[in-house]
Length: 375
Ligand code: PLP
Image (cartoon, rainbow, N blue to C red; front, side):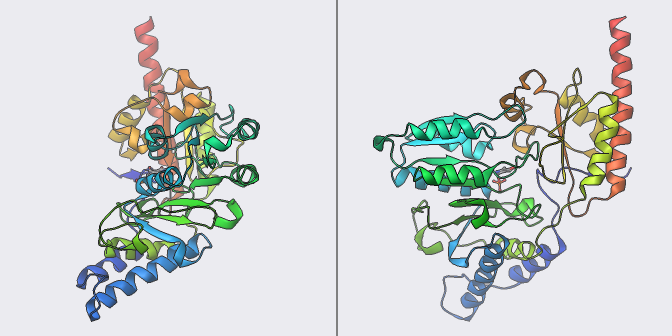
């Protein structure tokens, strides 16, 4: 059976460029903090990757802090904001758990910023909210992701940045899903800090970065050695970082939206809802909601047909929780019926066709079963 991987938003396959860079690094010895030749070579690999990652987002290398992934980068931004005096945090309702959870647990008041039914952060709400900030609340900290991991919908980040900056605040942008899938220039987004994750671009899991600008204050978040200019202690994951740098250099590598749209049209004709159609969204992502067809049944049926997709976000897929993103979009009743299909650099048109063929067959069987049991 041919196996079709359409779950890039969960994790992209390892790119050959990343593998080569990692194997080269693994073949060497040395700690990047050592001053001898082997240490200097390891350091050079880390610094080369820092430049490559910085270029991906249009910043200088000094702005990049390597982390153990997007989750740590988001945590680091929030902890830094709280440590530097923010006592009121605003996070959008559709953020990834790696933003929502640290914000909820922070020693600061956290407010959830609603989205419209179209899935876009409500800028009027933000404007009104920022206007009743008091000096006791400290500096405003606002988190808005660039592209949502479940729907692919691209958020009005630059507009939000303007409002946040007018209020003297700090905008943190989780760009984990956007990087490598759309043009991304940190200055144009207006972000004061930006989270990235290597494995969404075809580099290894467990590596990421927090990129910061002059509008943010990074604090020491792990104590130990002086790595990452004292901001993130611990010997660097040299091979992983080298792999991250190698894919960062490749720029945008997504799959053409026409393939996704052609598949979506066939499913919509059969009764599915294409969440995010008509919105500005990532080219590779399709979020489908089908009334009366539970997401786990869809995911399992497709898996048996050799097609890998996920229900809700990747982190939620293991726990079969209804999507908080769709609930925030007022699709709460259907939040357990959503699947996410996401292609990437190695996806072919045939993969999308195979997915649509398999889904239509499964759905037709599902409907027959429902009609028989209702009779
Ligand atoms: N932010 C978003 C939007 C994500 O989709 C993910 C992972 O799914 C993360 C953050 C977490 O990244 P990592 O898996 O590198 O911790």
